Structure formats: C-alpha cells, structure tokens
Amino acid sequence: MEDKDFLKSLTVLYVEDSKTIRVALQNEIGNLFKNFYTAVDGEEALRRYNILKSKNIKLNAIISDINMPKMDGIELLEKLRKDDPDIPVLFTTAHFEKEYLLRAINLNATEYILKPINIDDALKKIVRECKINTQNEAIKHQKEELESYLEAIDNIATISRINLNRNIIYANKLFCDISQYSLEELINQPDSIIRHPDTPDETYKTILETIQSGKKWNGKLKNRAKDGSTYYTNTTIVPRYNELGQDITEYMLIKFIITEEELEKREFKKKVIQNVKDSRKEKIEKDEYIKTLEDKIKNSDISLLHHLEDSLNSERKKITKLNTQVEFYEDEIKKNTLKYGKMVETSNEKIKQAFLYAKKIKAENEKFVFEVCTLKTDIEEKKENLSKLCKMIKTQEKTINDLKDVLEHREEQLGLD
Image (tube, rainbow, N blue to C red):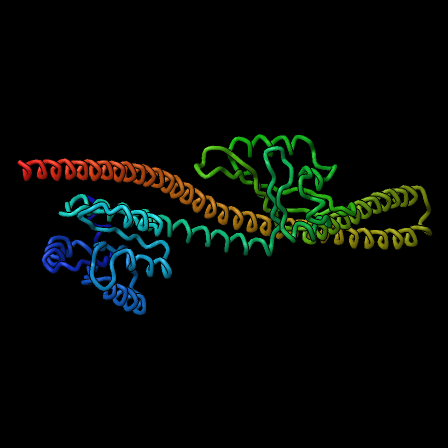
C-alpha cells in the first residue's frame, strides 16, 4: 500500500479490552509500524503512555475502543489531553453513542473507526491524522526557529514593517534608538520619515517597483535621524504574504548599520583627496618656479650659476618629496577602497544567505499552512456528516420506539382475543 515508509516511522498504542480483536489487529497491521504497543483498558494505556514518555519514546497516535472496563476511552482521552493536547486519538466503536461522541468532539478526538474494522480504511485514517499532526509540529518548530532567527537579528539590525500604504506599523528598539524617534512617534507615520533628502527619487521609485512585484530589494541607503544626523545602512526589504501565500500584506525592512565605517571611510577619502589636490597644486607651482629659474640661468652670468643650481636642486628635492607623498596617498586610497569593498561584499553575502534561508522557511511554512487549512476543511465536513448521522440515528431510534408501541398494542389486542 501507499505510505509504507511513513507508517514504518510511526509508534502507535492500540487499546482494546477484547483479546480476540486486539490480537487479530496486532497480527494484521502491527508489523507495518515502527512500534505497535497494546493495552487492555484505559488504565493500562495511561501507564504505558507515561512509561514511554519517561523513556523519550514519542507516541504518534493512539487507537482506542470507547467502551472498556476500569477506564473507558473518553476518560483516557480526558487525561491524555491534560498532558498532550495534540496527539491524534482515533476511537474504534460499534455504535454511535450520542453522549460519547459529543464528549469526544469536545476533547478533540481525531477520528472514528467503525467495527468491524476495515483495515485499509483504518490505515488511511491513521496516516492522514499523523501527517496532519506531523505537519502541525513542523510548522510550530519552524515558527519557533524563525522567531529565534528574527530575535537574533533584532539585536544587531533595525527592523520595521510597513503596510501597503508604506506607513510604519512596527519598529524594534534598535530602530528607535538609531533614528532617535520613539515608537509612538513612528507608528502610522510614512517610512519616508527617516529618508535623507540627498537620496534621489529614482532610488525609491526602483525600490517600490521591485517590492510591489514580489521581489526583495537589497542595497545601501542614506538615512536621517530625528536630530538631522546622517547614518548609512545595508538595507533589505522583503514582501510578506497572507497565510495562503497569494497576496502581499506588508513589507519588512531589515537594516544593518554601517554609520561608523562609512563616515570614517568618507572622511579619510576627503582628507586624502584634498592632500593630493594640494600636493599637485604645489608641484605645479614648483615646476613653474623651476622653469623660471632655468630661464634666468640662460640669461645670467656664470657667477650666478652655482647659486641658481643649488636653489634648483633644493626645489627638486622638495618636488621629489611631494611626489612621494602623492604616491603614498594614492596607495592608501587603493588599499582602503579594496578593504572596505571586501567588507561590504562579505556583509551583503551574509545578508543574502540569511534571507535565502528565511525565504525557504517562509515557503515551507506557507505550504504547511495551506495543507493544514485544507485538512481542517476536511475535518469540518466530517464533523458535519457525523452530526447528520447522529440525527439519522435519533430518527431511527424514534421509529423503533414507535414500532415497539405498535407491537405492544398489537400483543394486547391478541391477548384480548
């Protein structure tokens, strides 16, 4: 049958007071599972559940009869739900007792298997309910993992969320600290509140077109804090979708601050460039002075030659020194450009890897959410069919009672006759 590998990964506990039925089912399907434990009533089932739990053996599902001595299936379910609200519990029953069914529904009983048990039908139900539970656990785990990931980022990056109108609906503490705005001042304000006037409109137009198309945008932005000071960020903006992953509901902005690095680099570049300009200007002036001296030498007598030659050598030494300084500053520019370029490249690569992982988690989470929604719809339909079946049984009971009255009346007539 299908899902053999999945069944082989499951550990199941089967509770049935009838030895004949219990042994027969164990022989029929027990070897299909990783572990198949049995119990004769609710009390033994609860003991075995606690023993397995103490040994860190996870039960994937419990199949239990409803009517049993000592502790019936409903009492067992009540106690299990106090410890584990999600473990799939499937009831086997020969009758649809209304009182039992209502209590079972309230305790989140997972499924019902009618006796005599149809093996294929029972296995399909076990597989379906265990898959639902596995997916729910995976979603829960991934949500916890994503929250942990975002919590880690929360300590090193500014995080904000904006709605489709680009108004701020969330900002973390670091965002407030860097921008110098309080959370109350930021909420419902346009995200342009920290936009630096030096940033071209074309940049924001490109950003908007990118994220509205469902893609993420990554780049460097110049921002302005409340007091007018400037800070730079490596910024990533990603769209967020609804539970079904169909429509964009908001955008998340994650920014890594590079203020100190950027300002230091820019200030150093300014100083170096200015020094180079001054040195070149001085070199030009000296060249002109040398040329003037050379012209004078041509037009002067020999007595002045040695004096002018000494002056010329002195000026040449100064020029050589200036050339050395210019070469030094140019080398420094190249080194620092390479250094900061590698730093930015490494930072962007780490951000890219982090968000590829987040995107993967998000895609898997959306897939699981969609499957769970579908399965929930299926469960609701089953509950509705079950309710209809209960009503039909009630109608049949009334019909039987009416027939009993008719038979009693007829017996009375026959006795009189």
